[in-house]
Length: 271
Length: 296
Image (cartoon, rainbow over all chains, first blue to last red; front, side, top):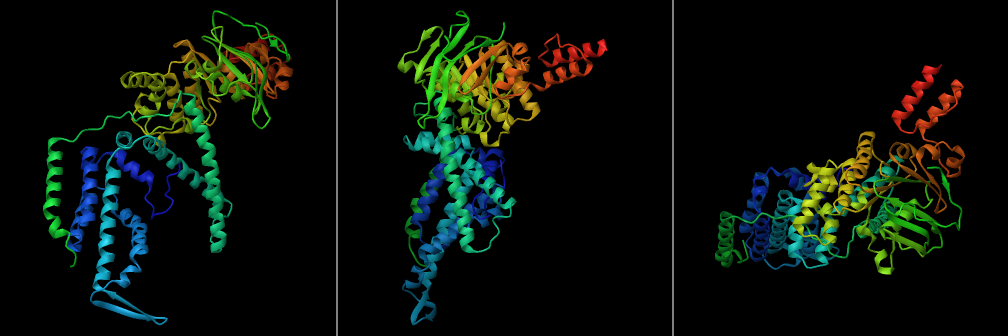
């Protein structure tokens, strides 16, 4: 299996699974259910909190957990690129329309563009919220064994969603591997060298078209192999998931209480 | 047992009523695009035997295997299990009798973990989770893969994947296991392991084994009976020492004589010795070659 990532800016599933299976972090010993509950609390917190300082504190706390769990920080910063592009694509224009104290202004083609403190705050807030959620999600994925994830999926999601999740993960790896193999084959014969945007786009469209067709073909073979073992439409994960201990439940309750108690202050906007 | 040649339209009698598990009687299957998968196919599997289906690519070996498992239903002819003709819906339940190990393990291993995958078949048989788990662990142990139980299929080597694929079928305890190209893409060490497992399936579990292959060296080493397949039909069958010493028949099947046997025949020719013995396995060939050397 190919182990080279598609890009240093796309989370590498092989690496994520490797960390999850290694089980060396202290968070690996925490019940997966506790981590799911914490993830929910983090999502609620970033939804409720509007104060940028508190959001920064939350982000730094999650980042500290990530570092303490001995996960790769350098790679994490590389993986931030696409979430940040996503944030900028959402509020990049909106930031220039916010009322507030002007910080800078330009005139471009007769249009007055003014960036206010509230505009900067909007970008900052959304970036902090996004990075906090992304970091915690990766922390969760990189410290939870895959068999626990699938076990939880089959208990949380209704059918056929659970079936899709249970089967999709492995084939995501196989498909990525297929993309890697095709790209290698292209490069080995001198292809893939950037000669122009159109040539490059056509090449990648061809590669992904081929992957789609091959994936379809593989799906048929997989279905055949499943039918050969009596598949009738339902499949459940077999793993027992460790339950949270008393200390973990107590910590969760404390976090939830802190969120409820602090929400009036934290939800106030402004600096 | 001599070579049994079969012409199209000829009857397909039951070979051994006491030992016969599955019998394909003049079955035919045409794919939707009009191509013929199998035609007038006559084939059977006995308990505790290894039968090799040998033929070139596209000769119908894989199509026959899919019929044995009920993945394909013959458009003509009959399939009998223990002498009983299967009626409509029963044919699709053949997976309980015949398990299939597919050529590409990546197509067979779909579950998130090895344990999940091996438990999949037993759960479909209606076993409880505890019972299915126990069967899965036993099956993995039987193929020497007990240490793989909590591994992810993505991180297994090709040989390990093949072991898990076999365990996934063995856990269902079928009466017959059919292997489609069992050792293709494997290194010699893992190929040797798979060979040993196939021999164990027959000896320890009393399972009837079908191997579809164009690797005649493998067939010579482990098979009790060879069926030569051409254009969707078994046109000749017999013991390896008969089939592999009939070069015309092998040529007719579009195959080549196994390398060990070819070596023995070449040695006989070079020394002017008449190949009176018909060695098939490695040990037999070594003994026969020693004999030739001693006779010089």
